[in-house]
Image 1: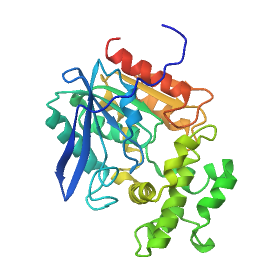
Image 2: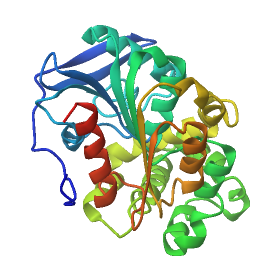
Image 3: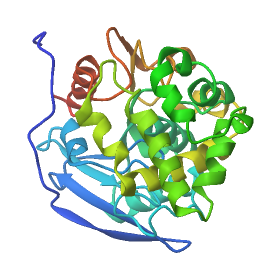
Length: 318
């Protein structure tokens, strides 16, 4: 195998797409790409509230995979937009199962990064017999310590300039609990305050996920429509700690035993400290583990993308 870094496959269009009624008033947008009848896979996007992008279709060889991508409840093309009703980790786990049944797959490769890794682990630990392989990147286990590191004290020390902009919409008296202060504004009736809070919340993430500034990655985070759904849904999930018990995903990692897996994590991942990827590696030692030097959080970091593509190629027998 060559030592050259692997990149995305060429652009492709879905061969099928639609809306799936998942109940509770929600309809989720899904698309299917690659080759019908090839190796089944599902792509879980980040956020929560992040939505899919055409680039995500390209981490799989389209000749060898039959890929489902979907916008999770309330974001992207799913409706109602930015809705927090009946929108929890466990609703999404059930949605993934509905999509699998709709596609007629017995098992599939599950691929997720960032919040997508959280959701992938929650799904795989709930339905291990439906997962043929698991590829996770930018590991986030949604513990209290991880949330506080990003939204209270930790990353603030690395990005004081950007942190100043993040705390700006919040009065001093409320800064002791930034997630709660943001929730008040994101679910409030003041539209101007909601948009200001959504943009600040969203831009904070967009500008801290790459090792070096990358306007192509961070740009969409400042767009009002994206920011409202992203910030409202993400904050809703994080204020509720994902409706999971503290430490649940690592505690239950024994359920992944026997599932071939790959864990990829950037050494300088700011939102998701490498400590938690290391903990997953220890709890699920059968999975291949890659800690990428000189990389931040985003899947687009060259060393991270290289290992993700190698993993999907290898699991397709390439």
